[in-house]
Length: 125
Image (cartoon, rainbow, N blue to C red; front, side, top):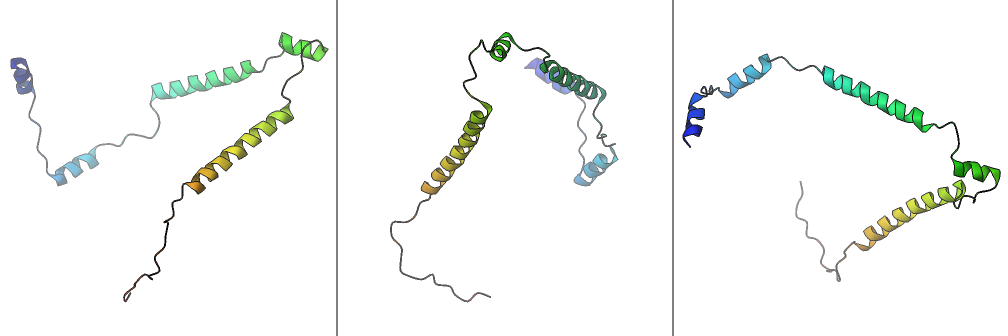
């Protein structure tokens, strides 16, 4: 507790400014530029180079052994062709949209009975 008091006593007092003076003090400070700082720019460049390297590395010039065996007729064929995969993806999107609409439609709550009285509207100007 004594150390906390010593630390608090060593700090200079904070200036009390009115709202007008605070606004003036803010407006006189220079604005930070919109350009990223140098370390941030270096990180962006390095990240871009890493992405480009990854994309180049992903383009492999030779086939894997399983692909080579399939082209030679020795391996097992693909279980899902591109057309079947497209059908599965499009069907799953349609199913998702259908289930969303189904849930929204059946979550609508209506009253069990309606009143026969009309809504009374007085003069509206």
